[in-house]
Image (cartoon, rainbow, N blue to C red; front, side, top):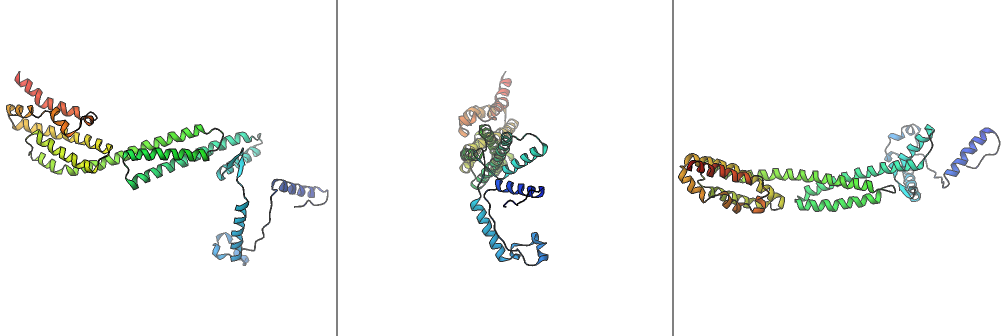
Length: 328
């Protein structure tokens, strides 16, 4: 790399290149390596050969060279921040495009663009990681709704902490809030998905438990509202032994109310058809909805259920309104 002697234009051009190399690459080294393979014909096909087909001493030298490079190489820094591989490639491309176009080179604007690209890349990576790990945790451990909520809280804080450590730029608050919003949205999607799956599971479990009930209802074996409610209550209590978290209980109450409403209507129609009005009045005086429903569904849950008012109205319309009209 020493300059050649002489004043000709050719020598000056070569010396200029030498000066550039020595100025830009001050820390230089030379590492001698043997030919990877002896046969000249195989040298032309070197890129298709496996490492096992190369000379053992060449493979050893490659390993030594890699260790040497890794021991001396330092991360590229810009404005006190380390630049990773993807960001460095983006920076190089931007600088080359600027130089080739003849525009004014601005490292400051280039750095801003790099920070934006890198922050968005980290956001995408962490949000995908959050979704994958959350769904995997739910599948492996069959988490309940409260457990999913707690896992989301811990995982969200973990992802935000990782982002703060890896984010590039002076002001990353905007990107941090963006990540936080994305994680919350993913949590709602995952939670809804889990709720839908649980609803299907509970629906199947309820249908299985209701086989005998539907048989008795279809065979018109229920002669009173008390018998019907008692069977539904026992089925509900039996299901709650396996599904005891708050969400499952809410779904059970909701679907059992639907079954109560539909089966009650069927029972009422049957009673009205087969019983005379006086005996019907006597039966229903002691078996009103308001006095019987609390025995199967607690008041706090009844207030949540959409079908509770429907069940009340159903009894009023089917029993008490016809009785009043008949009386007058």
